[in-house]
Length: 302
Image 1 (cartoon, rainbow, N blue to C red):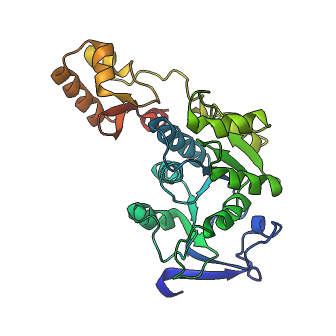
Image 2: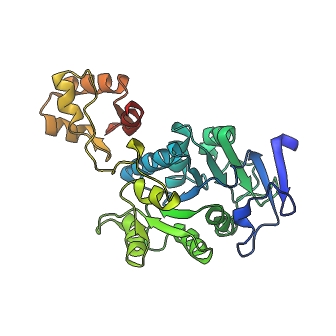
């Protein structure tokens, strides 16, 4: 257990049951953290590294909503969609696991160092590669069979026509997993892969409920799983001008200039209102000068 790393072989009872029947199952896993209970449902969330602000935000939301319902969120800790899947689960206080294409003593990519430290606190980072093995390109398609193998279904958030995420889908199909995809605009290159999957029979996801109903036969719905585009209750204690700005926001990040045009407010006044709304935790700024409604605030209030 050097560096807090556990070595689990197929002979050990801790070895995940979901991996045992898959083709070319890994002989052993190196694990940092704690693997989830074997009976717990799990969803793999994959997608583009160079994702859109919309993709980031919806991934964060869906991962959080599923995690709140006890679903384990699996991904590969890559840039983009993977990172936001882990972030959404962690923000919800849920369990998430990252499968590496290198030794788990190596944080890859380096920019995800904080995730690398946080994930094992309520989940695990794991790999079939021994500590010290570097992240070379050929390792990643192989690790994808583990991401899909540990799951009960694979959700693709954004993917180009020839996206590497589709390798995980192929592995999942071979393993008999359910495939889900986020529908997107037909003009968006990052939606081509998802829209094609839907045409081929993947289940379109417009709310967490679309997945939860499949995972739990007795699922009856919850405030955490409303449709992404549903109208949220207006937060309490907002002043009229704050309500005016709040009503312009949704799940898709909106730029400051667009908000200025929509509200007709002077820029300095608008920025003051946005700051107040951020301090009240009813909106967030996922990236500089882009604003979204804080779905976590709404769900926590419900």
